[in-house]
Image (cartoon, rainbow, N blue to C red; front, side, top):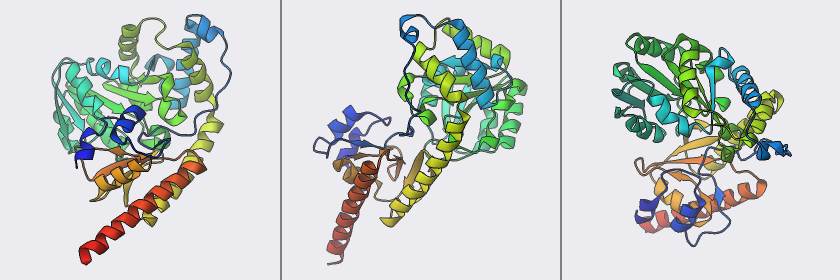
Length: 348
């Protein structure tokens, strides 16, 4: 379908959405990302967070809180960065260029970052194949289908890679809403493991650009030295410190997202759209007419994530307001009605 040739490589670009659907109903309801539409409550920042360079003491406080929240062995195992994206090629460079394997299909930036670091990169669908890698990369829970690899299996893989000087990278960007018992955050002290954690997705503050790498202390120090002072901006420090320590908000948000996911699944089911997986921040849809659904909803101003390399699948985030829920329901009803009309036409 020609309309889909210009589909965005990443979700969240309203400028590209307007180019793709110039006659869409506006404003767009952007369901193309896995970012929480209910952000951590905004608060008045201290003016010094903008006027002054970040104080080293605030940076230390942030990594202490992050270590506690994520379950890292100690603050010495935590590196704070301006988003996890900037960490990807740096982490891939921790091992000399060799064979990098990414468990896919998954977030495409991991393969690109490994190639930037000089690795020969291949995407594999078989978990067992990762044992042959020098650098193995797994997104857990996976984006976009929500697949989860159990902790015990990951530790066996990590041990094999560590024995030959390799590295296992686990991107836990969505572990805040995943089965946290399968996180490797508490195991990084063994060495040969780097865990990535994203702040912006669960807390709904992606624009702050804040993320973390968890590793054994010597590896964390190697990564940290690449950034130098003031890597994390003052406002991101303030939000990170407050939000990561707010465990009550986190627990309440997980429960709220779970309820919204049940509601979203029921809405899709009502209009014959099968949900094939996902997390409580996004749902993974698989259907023969994925292109038609993407286009139909796009014309109605509802932006989903389409995958050109997997044309029968879509990813849908959560609506953020009752108005957005109503618009999604209306757009789905219009799409289903047109589908029924086409079906009747074929039968005639």
